[in-house]
Image (spheres, rainbow, N blue to C red):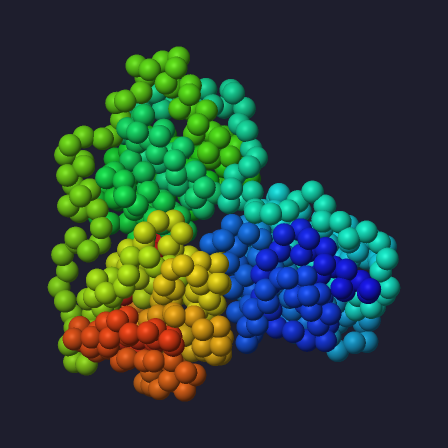
Length: 553
């Protein structure tokens, strides 16, 4: 056995079930060793796509994402996806061959690249320690919730290996999802209980770090009368609750924004409360108390000043608070923000579909709101929505409903366009029980178009919706009002439906609501090939969330 094979076998023993990648000479043997150990290999057409697929897979499955790429250009091609994963603290191991000889055309400082984007650079440094080092990379991904680059030098990969093939102590599902560690200090729990006891209008905003703790958060919210909301990445967590405010921030409905601004206490649960979630801070009113609960102490000091930061797992902290408020001082709970009038307003105004708008469809183009509402009516409830970035992104993010927190995958920590299709593929691999839906702009779709072949090859019954305004819409609406020339961000028409058919898709072009009959026909059929919906959308002005975001520029 050589070292490359040993690394693959050790990672398989750690619990790796799926690896995404593009195979070259530098990662050929480690990838084959993973496959020989029973790990599923999903081939992408570009390393950037493979890395984002693994990121989405980790988010939706609760398992560590694993990627395998070639040395040098294989890694540089993966960098945008690696950056997104690192910024999102996605538990991931990226395996990359490494050319250590300076004279090699493939030689670059791979560790420096990883460190520059926030990933953890690690390396197999010897044949004797290869198994232990591979296991340690997996442990860091799981227990520290980090994105790890494990460099595999070519000379060491080829060396004989006769050491132990032990998986180490980190295996199975990621603690970032299951919340298996992070007991809070009793003093911090008491201080947060004091804030809750004094609050009459508490709001909980749950982020990705709270997705495992719906039961505990709802029990506490019911006790103290809090209204629950989420960041975009945790959308759907409280779906089904009559008090669910849906998403806080730029995607918030007018009612949600109003109720959060009127809160006297906002608690971020596994949520950074960044500029998007707080609308550049405008949703936190003067005098409102702010608390955060997070496993990462650094997150408690980021973005907005807090009155109290609690280090701990969200579920454990919420359970401890429920116990504290119920047993010693039952009279301290039960006031809260809930009333029959608030319940009535959430029922009537709590979703974007309930907000009136003037349909701007016409002239061979469909209003993106009308398009998305029509799709929401047609698509089955058991869906998983993946969103690319751009001017269009608010429409599918807020008008396509999701069944729960497992129905929405949002790889937008780096705000890169072009990740949405790969996100949908990774999410589909993680959750084959749901209809995968990718929502893309025309710019992001054309950037990632090679992965259409991956969708067909994998046999995914995916619906891809392209919101086509024939432009980089965000730039059009950012710079256009100031009189700048826009020729660099506008493009001639492209027949995306024909391109999709060339890859083996079914495809429909939508310019008015009646054209959605083609989507209904596909849904009623065998779904034996994926569907691309080429929607020619209106683009006279920016979406509401973009207009809000530009206020911060």
